[in-house]
Length: 206
Image 1 (cartoon, rainbow, N blue to C red):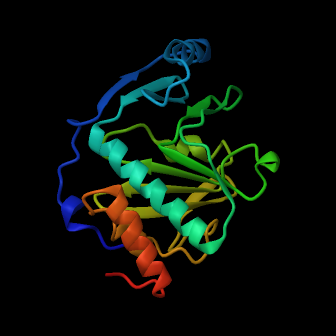
Image 2 (image 1 turned 60 degrees about the vertical axis):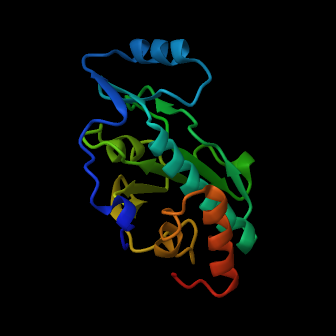
Image 3 (image 1 turned 180 degrees about the vertical axis):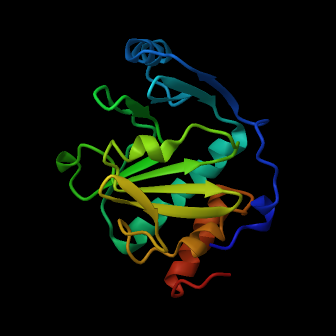
């Protein structure tokens, strides 16, 4: 995927997002943290085998993840794909010692038949994070996208492992390079209108 110039060369060392990692944390401790945080989308809390990551996203992190989500929803509306936005739905399994809250996530088709989102989206605005794929792979999320430095890399679950794929499988036909080309727009309004126009013109990257 072609990176957008606005993001391609940025330094993603830990400076913008506020991240704390705690080790030796029990499952009960993790659930207590979720209880204290309450029904909010931030900070986002992830758990993997006794390690907890607490991340308070920066304004730009939130802007990028929201714009990606809006463009996914625009594509679905233009193509007539039913979807349910489930945002930072807390996905967890005590027996598997894993818990995660995506930046964005989606159910496609009948939401009553889904125990997990089919698609989770993660924005890597600050490097050095917990291994999210190691969490997602045991929670049964079919596809995970990682945005980093202007690129979206999709991963598909194959058995108990994720493999990088060239194009989305849960949204076949979605041109991720076209989608990411609009993330450098100054407003979400501009990005959506530009993406709509491109899709209606046949889907050509500007």
